[in-house]
Image 1: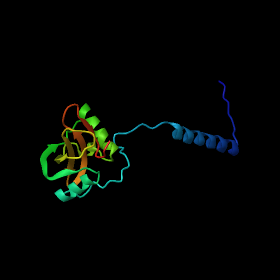
Image 2 (image 1 turned 90 degrees about the horizontal axis):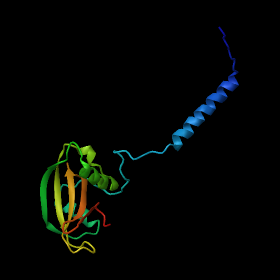
Image 3 (image 1 turned 180 degrees about the vertical axis):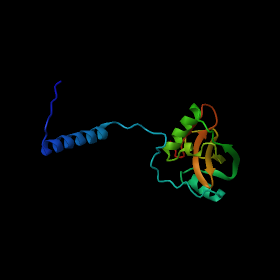
Image 4 (image 1 turned 90 degrees about the vertical axis):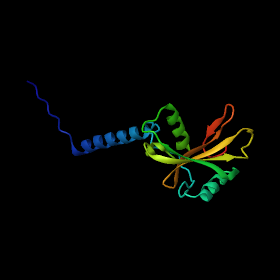
Length: 157
């Protein structure tokens, strides 16, 4: 049987330890990170306190849209517990504007739909929809309802 022992000095031990820690820190810093479901865009829009029609109208007008302030529809909807491909893509729109519907899976929310009268370069009917939970906007979109249509976040694309 052959037994070998190696005696390292304290300086060599700490040098190897320092190099190892430095390598781990560099590796952690250089490994790419990929988007996680919980991450959202940093948006400076206030989505809270939307319990009255006046506040919702002011929110819509802050994006430059004109609407019929009295002509809106209200509906109760349930955010599904499990997102299919359509809800996943829709949530991508929400995350781009600083919101995330995944936090509200299974919750009953109120959907307010207003009709935009001044959407640029579109002659069809355009809806501004917002999803409100306990007074706060948790999601929404602007959508063209005629022909090929379109869907995007609250801002004018």
